[in-house]
Length: 317
Ligand SMILES: *[C@@H]1O[C@H](CO)[C@@H](O)[C@H](O)[C@H]1NC(C)=O
Picture 1 (cartoon, rainbow, N blue to C red):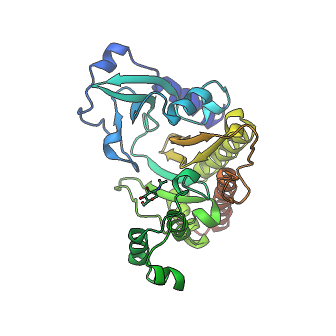
Picture 2: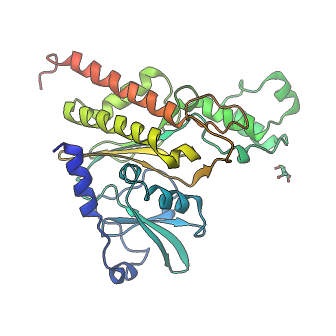
Picture 3: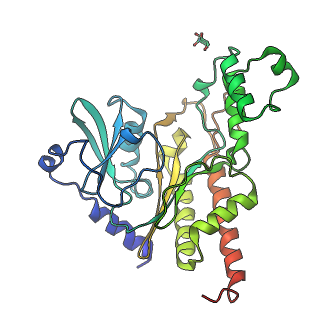
């Protein structure tokens, strides 16, 4: 049995739902169980329990993320590449979804969060063409030479222009993914990686993350390729635009895991529209580059794998 198959089974067992009574007794203010960490998102919006389940706060039960998990859990293959979904729960007048705690059972793990997509905003978020002085100010605070002469003249830019500028700072635009956050063994999480952009910066970061662990590299590559294949064949991914989702990678001495997470900005496509998740975005075509990002990510991992094999024999540890 492959390591990952073992892991998948093991992970499922670890996150078997506890009795409803036990869950209800838990208050969101309880201390976090050992080893739990949140790399990105709002700290209060995700509440771990001690039972291998995390609760993620949502606005209402018609939430896009709920719909996504409901649809995905009907697909046997696809449901294996996302956290196990245990349903909705209302607690202390808040709505939550309950998901598998992906860190349950790992000891002092290395963790990486990679945001997928060459477009990381919804079309509806940038449809307003109003020129905004506040976004011009934000832009020049980052890079005073970024605005065009006309934009300097107007001292204002559109939301779309600002979002594209932000993406150009990271590798999202060029590669379809960006390393959002990571944690190395025994260290505090690093979150300011949004400007990690060049090929060299990215492969050095991945190399650092994977250390020289050949077995981890091999299992991860296999898992990422499997995930890509499942996405390509999934009815859910065929019918949805996927914005702001991440690949979440975890490993320790014993185990390796990778899942696709965060579906708050997944949107069903209009009936007449289909996308391949790889073509460049033009306003209205809804392409977001999800699979293009996976292609590039797999390529980067392969490069690191090849590089570290050529290093073999030089490292005398
Ligand atoms: C567009 O944005 C401007 C400035 O933020 C706002 O005043 C206006 O109401 C928005 N228009 C629409 C249609 O949302």
